[in-house]
Length: 601
Image 1: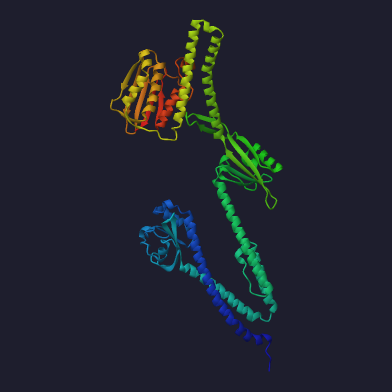
Image 2: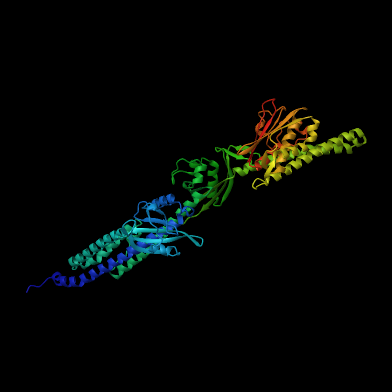
């Protein structure tokens, strides 16, 4: 009797022993794969719904065109379907169909859960697409209310395709295992080497950051323990890698959103990061991260020097630098006067950050303080002007008081003359202070609404003429009023009267005796037009752009002689601006001056 060899002996036994468990394992594995795929599908469409809820503009949820395009963009390149539904069941956006052709979704299974604030999940037939679908519905909350529902879905055919592919792979592996067991059962060494080879393959994939490549291997205890530990390690590393990636993306988003320019370099001052503000500030057209140096990008040796000091001293540094290549323009909010500086003032703060790999990073933060510097200059100029205007009358008063104390008081004629001068200068000082207080009060109206009402223009003009009556009579000036007596204007009566008084008083002061001043008014649908004309000497063309500035006078000597403070027209302009109006002037050489005011109706 011919004895069977070992293979022939154990083959039937191995087949009977191994085939049923393998087949059972295949069935269980297939069910497990199915559960995993279904669970993963559910988690995926759920996570997608939460992600979309975080980014969808709630204020435009009823904008069908916008929401439909938003849905299409959101699922581009995937098999997902996204539907945005209002609480009443009306579809306001869908990634696959025109919402106008979709029926009301209020009584859909998943929708019923979502409108009551729960997560809705359903597996059913889609009437609109004509296929079986997985659905997940998530309410969009606005406070305690539900403003809409986000529904994500995926065709069951897509899931079944994944399952079929998994089944094929599982079946293939199962067949290979069976074939391997039957073919190499006599080669025990190969059974031991197989898991080791598998581990090697997994580690190769793992080295390329494929964290899912590691799986638990059922085999000898040593191999199993090694694969379990590798699986744990891959999970920990994957979590840390994802966290680091997420934090890096967050950091990039924060840096991009900052107004301040941010530059990050290494210890050799090679650029590692720059945000959009820095690109705009230094007008960077092209930059090579990890190649270009700080001085190459910024072209500023002072900034480079400050970074070097930070590295040497290993302490934060702070300095103000000037970028001379830039031109900045600031507008004085009161005079509308433009101040131009040929350069940007930057407040630079630097700090050094040590890293675990002993490769420190230099953080450079640049804040544009040009406007602050310019406003400081404007304030300084204003203080200097005020000081100068106040100093002249005060010096005059003090001088004549000293003269009187030194004995001139005994000469009645000189005493009267000096007291007249002191009185005149005191009136000038009083006028300057009152005008400054008026300016301060008017400036407080800049961010608040003034009380306005409809008034008869003739009433305001008549009141202003009464205030100027003495000067008008002294110079025998003819005032002509050219507008209907029933012309209404919407203004603050007291403020607008003050503006007219300043303009009429200026016209009377600077016009020769027996001149004519015309006050013209006309109503238009959008505004009321007021013109004040005189036939005085006019204003030189070079001075016209500056006449509304504080303390600016065309002829300082004559202005002081006539009691001017240089603030009258500045007050007028601010009153008109407080009414949301505008004021301009025309002054042809030697042909008088015309002030043109437009007040919104």
